[in-house]
Length: 129
Image (tube, rainbow, N blue to C red; front, top):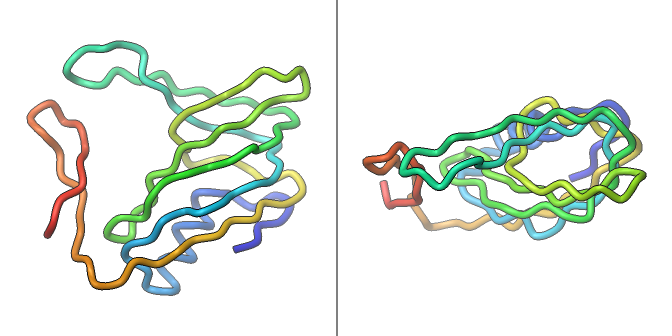
């Protein structure tokens, strides 16, 4: 998958998975550049997740992303840095915008009927449907 200048990363991935009817896949590789990064990180070690949402609008180099598409829904994490070499790691959110390009490679997994469920604390896990 190739994304160009101004494309929204997560939204484009979701759209392409929907268009192709992909239910389960693994993100094998992702590199590129962003002009806007939106992600969240956990902030506490309590039973229920407490998240901090971060938006950075700057020149961002993406070193990699990894994650899964489960039941058609992406869950991706990103590792990247800005021009001052500050590093950012976290759960990718809607709103990330490509600066020049983003190249992503997915491998579809057929024959599995998976979904995400929430445990007693509201935290997601992968389960059979």
